[in-house]
Length: 204
Length: 204
DNA sequence: GTCTATATCGTGATAGAC
DNA sequence: GTCTATCACGATATAGAC
Image 1 (tube, rainbow over the protein chains, first blue to last red):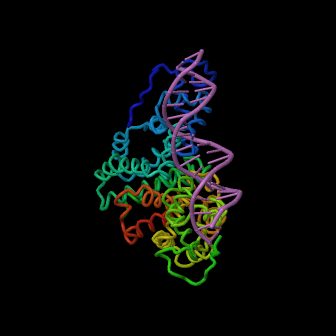
Image 2: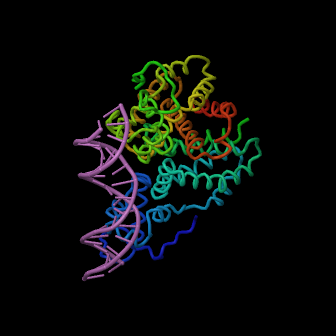
Image 3: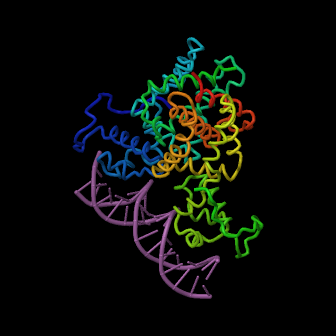
């Protein structure tokens, strides 16, 4: 769920003409991420992804076999949740909300990560299978680990309320795009999100 | 956006055999709500709705003309937002979070309302048009009205953070269905949601 | 490797018989 | 009013030429 299985280790030019040669795979994956992020799994068509990548639609099947497999390949999670959880739990307990908010907001500022998360979010809303994937990831990778490190009652419920706040922020800011929230800089949101997270996790 | 345009005022039997006679319209709308709620606009098919309602697919077009119009008919918002906002803003300012949480949780407990909101949420995640509808509704019906009644700095941002918490709670509880949040009774969530809302709206 | 052409399917919508 | 039959379209996926 973490490693990237790319072929060419050397980072070659990523934009420009595509002279029938190599590293189209990376280009296809980027185009796929953008399409899946913008439209969700179902509305994103293989043809449109191929068009955006500047290649033929049949190539996508040649590389990835099916639309499902391309979706999974485009979504490889770019961070190790275990490390993140450890880094968030160590330090002043009164600043855990700030660490969570800082990490989350920084994550969503990264364009390619944002695309992956948006694709996941949009698709989970419409697909029971992807929703189940997300549910499993949340509970085994996040909830159980964070809940163990908190010394409060009902830790699972608290962690899930934090996740719900984060999910909803993503929905309102990046999917619904309601103003002024959508255009507010991350630094302005950080203390507000941090306070909400801290309240959920450690308040009375 | 509020009134219901049903024909037969007499509430006849709503389940049972369908002997080719009347009030199929209501049955179709209920089936449509369930399908749109479960799958979102795009994945819900007219044929599946017709099958669930026990009628022919052509009848749906005969009644509603198009899938869009059926979707809109199935979504008629069941409450008057202006009244809700007024009721929430009157009273002890320190209990506004509790009033918001109580109203929201009660709303989602109502099965037919839940279906409408789920259909809206699922579809907004995948459709830019529906997302724009939701954005417009939020800002003109909710944000502007509530923000005027608060005596705090950055009232719009605060209200939108509250909406994001509510959106995310719906996502986590009803779409992702992560436990224990999904099965927690509303009474257990009420104080937790109320505290978060209150913090967003009135904290330092 | 890359493309053209096509098979197969499910969709929304319509026409028209009864 | 309700059904059968069908149209037009766009999708994924595949076969096969170059």
